[in-house]
Amino acid sequence: MARIEVSGLGKSFQAIKGETVEAIRDLSLSVGDNQFVSIVGPSGCGKSTLLYIIAGFIAPTRGEVRVGDRSVQGPGPDRGIVFQEYALFPWRTVQDNIRYGLEEKGVSRDEAARIVDNYVRLMGLEGFQHKYPRELSGGMKQRVALARTLAYDPDVLLMDEPFGALDAQTRELQQDELLAIWRERKKTVLFITHSVEEAVYLSEKVVVMTTRPGRIKSIVDVDLDRARPREEVVTSEGFARLRNRVWLEVREEVLKFYGATREGRG
Amino acid sequence: MTAWELATRGGVIATQILPTFSSVCLAAADLVSSGELARHLAVSLYRALAGLGASIAVGVLLGFGMAENRHVRNFFDPLVSLVYPLPKTALVPLTMVWLGVTDKAAILVVFLACLLPMVVNTYHGVRSVDRVLLWSARSLGTPERSLLTRVVIPAAMPYIYNGVRIALPVSFIAVISVELVASKVGVGNLISGYGSMGVYDYMFATILLFVAVAFVADRCAVRLGGRALAWHDERDTA
Image (cartoon, rainbow over all chains, first blue to last red; front, top):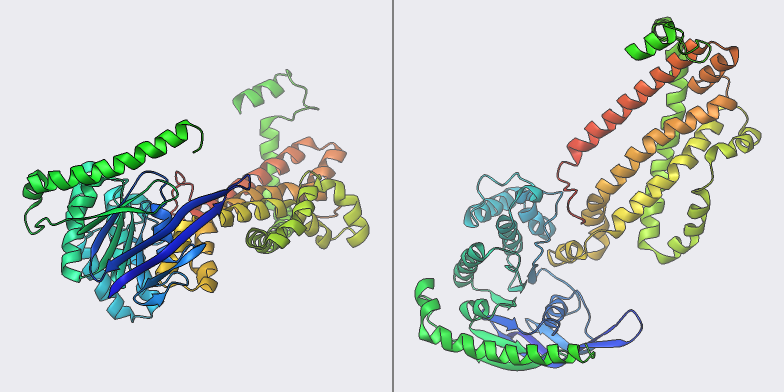
């Protein structure tokens, strides 16, 4: 059974001058239980819009989204979200941020403290529990954001370019940390990224979206052996082949979008 | 200060216009030790802080209301814009008629003067809460009705505090303005009294002492707010 089922999704927005912008048209997608799926595509293709609809922040214009066989009516603790901007609560310390979802869940203070401690250790945040977000680096903030979402244990993890604002080295480290967590905790992950390399490295399936109005262009299965260390995976021929294939598909759409903008059709 | 003393003693500036620094100091010492200042200061501070407190309570509520509800905003927007350019001291004759030469009249003027900064700052504080914070809270299990207390209020606090910091000196200015013309007690009354009697060293002394008190009050506000809002990063817009 699919954990996330998107059927015939359509989404249009009213732009400032009143004209209608169609972000997504007739998009259908299935994500299986405990799968790690990435979505790539040109800028403005509707990737984030799709994620926000699945998360329940925005309502679709047409079509339906079902998560865990229930129709999505709004946000909920069954779908955790991680944003590129971290979205940490600045008035709360690191540990209070992580504890937030547990408070909403009604977990007892002692149990919550135990869970928070666990995640502080897991995400390498020891010594920073009492710091405020303003005192943290980008990488640390991202770790707190991830810990906060994982702490109350949602089944589904929706990630909107979570590593986009990090430097290249931190980004790679975070990718490996995420993979380790995914392997151990068994979650369904839907991951949006601009980086084709990142998508191929992390996922079992890479979904390529067309330029606006977005729909699925193709789905590429990634059959790499991820038990191997990063150095081996990234330098392997299999990786290069997959990366090139996905990249060319995305490139095609990027050029379409670019061409359309040049001619003034935006 | 030395220049002041020399200029006035040496006759460069006539003492009718500017009393000597030393005479002002003597006057100040007298005012403090005799308890004269304290007596009037208590009245003025009471009026200023009462008006400020009322403006914070009403202003924050109004700011929230206007930020969250379109109809509230449309209703109060023109009222707020009308009150803004109006010099509150122009209302003093009116308040004298309505409420006489009393505490209530002074507090009303202070209230009106401080209302705008509180409303405007609260409004912007609520409007600038980043939607990803609200969305994150919802995904973490916060029901829609609890967003106000769990996210919006804490996020808006730095802006509300800013409003208070702006309104505080305004409350002091307003109370003095009222008391200059429409009061039998208070620091403003003291100043205008000495002024009209030509006792300029006491008048200057009163003004300077009052400025000192206002300064201390502001520092207190900064210290209090600074501690509670240590988490706020001014560089972030959200």
